[in-house]
Length: 344
Ligand SMILES: [Zn+2]
Image (cartoon, rainbow, N blue to C red; front, side, top):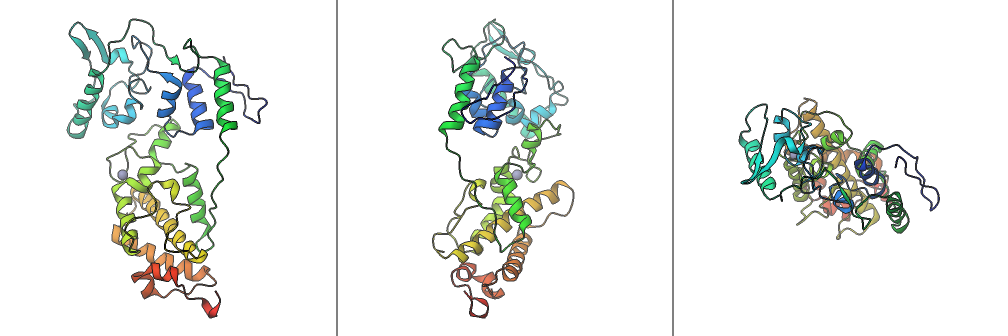
C-alpha cells in the first residue's frame, strides 16, 4: 500500500507515498484527528508491539506506554550514546528476568538518575517478548492486519461524522493586529515550542522548556503551566481581583470572558488584557531563548498594565480609562468604562 485515495465523500488530499505504518499514523494524527503528540492515537490504531525488539527503536517509537521514551525521559535520551538503539540493544530476557544494557555518554545523575529509576520500573513491568519478528497489530481489522479500506473508513468517519468546529475570531480592535495574529498562531498550534520543532525533525539538544528546564515544552506548558507563565497569570488574577481565572488550557484563551462582566465592550477589554498577557509571556520566553534580558514577573505585570492602558485608550474610541483606576480596579473599569465625550 503506497497511497491513500481520497476521492468522494468530500475529502480532498494529495495521495502520498509512505514507508510504513507509522507514516499512516502520522498522517491521520496530523490531518484528521489532531491529537497533538499522537500518543492517544497510536493506542487507537495499533496494539503494543510484541516482538524480539530487533526492528523497533528503543527511544524513538512508542512501544511501551503511550509516549516515546525520548520524550518521556528527555534527560536520559540526551545521555544515550546511540540514539537509534533498538529495543533488543537495551533489554533482553534471561531465566531470571529482563536484563538492561545501557550505553550512556556520561553517568546519569540527579534528575537523569531519577528518570533512569522510572524507566527501569517501566521495563520491569513488561511481559517477556516473544521470539517473533517485530510487528504491530492493527485494531481496525479482526485479523490484526492493516488494510486500506479500514483506514479509508477511519478517514471518512473523522471528516464526515465530526462537524467542523467554528473558528474563533481573533480580531480585537483595542489592541494591535500583531497580537491577534499571535493568538491565531497559538490556536493553530503554530508556535515553535521545542516539541513542535522536534516533531518537524529539527535536531535539538533538548526538548525541555527553556524557561524552567523541568518539563517537555509544548504550547500548553509554555503558555499556561510553566511556573513562570503560571506566575504571570496569577498576577493577572490578583490584579483583576478574581478568585479563579476562567481558563485552564491555552485553547480557551481566545474566547475567555468573565461572568460578572456582561457588556460587549467590557468583555472586549478583558479579552484584550488576556491576549496581551499571553503575548508578553511568549515574548519573555523568547527573550530567554535568544539570550536577551528576560523580565521579572512584577516587571511583566507592570508592562502588561501600561501597554493595555495605552492601547485600549488609544484605540477604543468610546473608552476613556483612568490610570489610577485601571491599576487598582480594572474590573470596575471594564464594568463602568467612561465613554469619551459622552459616547458609549
Ligand atoms: Zn517551563
